[in-house]
Image (cartoon, rainbow, N blue to C red; front, side, top):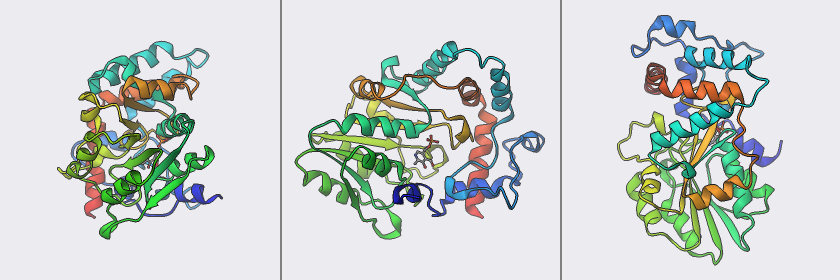
Length: 307
Ligand SMILES: Cc1ncc(COP(=O)(O)O)c(C=O)c1O
């Protein structure tokens, strides 16, 4: 296994998803126990254990999403054109952005790859990351020959925003800052007050990738999604989201990117288009409306973190 792959799959315990793993058996009032008991998923065994280091949601997909995915299999001979358009529109409504601000991707890792592929074409470019973070940024940077600068963590595994900034300021090319908030594998939240002023200052030749795969689990009021900055018109930041975590859909491969049309266009040129699989798209559509399951997913995670 390559180092970067090892980092992606490394065995740091991410407390947020560890929580989900522990909580599969916990009663959570927000979701009826009866319904929770009806969620079907692959039960862990010694040969097939829960892979905490993959940060999979161990609750299983919501029953409504599972039913939608099953129904979609019967339509698998067709392209999911109408449903893809519907999902795209629904997410644009949710994020209050026009249609050309969003790209559906095959999980958020496809978004990371597309960004790295697009920006690696610039004449001089570096990727700046915290020393401990999700490994796909580094993995795809290596693939596209983009040099990677790692900034050591602060005490308590916090992200050193000033250190990231120093690495950008000292470089005379283009910098991609890959910023996972809350961070994986450290579970730390970087307060908006630390990162927003930097993004808003619009440093020359800098793109911020805000990977908010775990944002729905955050209860720390100092956290704020970067979506607001994109809605305010900033074109130096792109948000990456996934259905793999809160919605327990890792195997369905649905994610999306939100950003200024100039960035989305560059990403689009790196992918085959929004050609997502039928069960994944229909499960995603249903999951967005399944608020009881979302509450259950959040609450069981919180409960487990306390344990
Ligand atoms: C921070 C972060 N971003 C992205 C991903 C990739 O998720 P996806 O399944 O959407 O490709 C993960 C998966 O663990 C992750 O932890």
